[in-house]
Image (cartoon, rainbow, N blue to C red; front, top):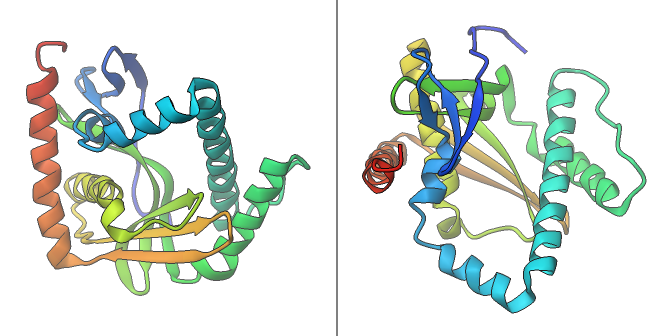
Length: 227
């Protein structure tokens, strides 16, 4: 861990259109995930799944995935900070989270050469904000790094919003700290303990940044009467 930058503490507020954070002018700006969720065109599949399995089962599955993901993220953060990380309980979800974390440590974190920040707040006044999993150097390249758990490893074409999220964070970091991060790294482990690395390099980064800016514009147009 190298503390190169002074990351801000974000003050979170909930609004009728989702999570927001207060910028330096004390004005609420949407979180990156709120923008992506509010402009997604793939919700119909999730809605159909919920209708098929029912609300109770859907809520159970979502909570289980969230609990596992949260436990894994906390453990990885502790591991990279060189703190005690193996603090899992004996429940089945906790044991799954432990196995997934071990897979990340064995195969997924080896490319991280330097960590500048973990769970860091990033914000652009009047635009957006969010919390990035990890910023640092990956295989020699300044990168925005995200850790994802999944029931099954996802196909690259299914996870464009993950890449857009990374581009949003990287662009905010570049503006805030005069960096030049153009690599996004998504590290994913599923419940079968399969590991997959997804990379976005500079050419694709510029293309996805344009897409992210359009999603931000679309969000503002869609919800400007609500703000």
